[in-house]
Length: 262
Image (tube, rainbow, N blue to C red):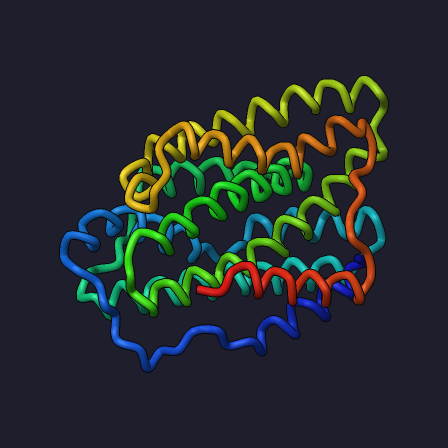
């Protein structure tokens, strides 16, 4: 898909309301204790203003003469902020407090402040979104709360597109590199992906376990995520085959919604 098509997708998705806020949160104190730290931390992480990413995207868009990409990234950021808002409303609803600082979020924000490379931004988002898919599925499975399940389902639907959006971009970036450039990226991408995978596990293993994932199952799922994203890019040694056009995205939307119903 080109940038104009992604703009159309994000705008259409913004009109979809998948969370019934009239529902009362049905969750026990024990369940809250098992998820609250990670819920608060990820809610904080989803509230970034995206200014550093937008700065890198603007510079990149001008370099490739694609001004529409800037608007697509703005809408992507807005969708991420929607996730943070919804998670925040849920935290409020269960009588807990939103946090303003978390070591993982602080570290990530510090690293982002120095990053002006669109390639590194795209790589980082792909890895974070991949772990987010396992995280939000675990959060969804950790309780019987219908409201929380709807919030997680909404996020999971969005995240599937976010990974496609970013994979298309990194495929384009890598396509123009030399064979040597592609080879060292293959090693670096894999190292970065699985290093981040480990950090996320140790930071949020309580939540993952509450959602039915031991380390072995978490690692297996993340390995599959890698194989379907950066691993496919590395194996191809060139541009990753991705869905293109409005027809494909509409089909993907219906399939994703069906597979993520609570």
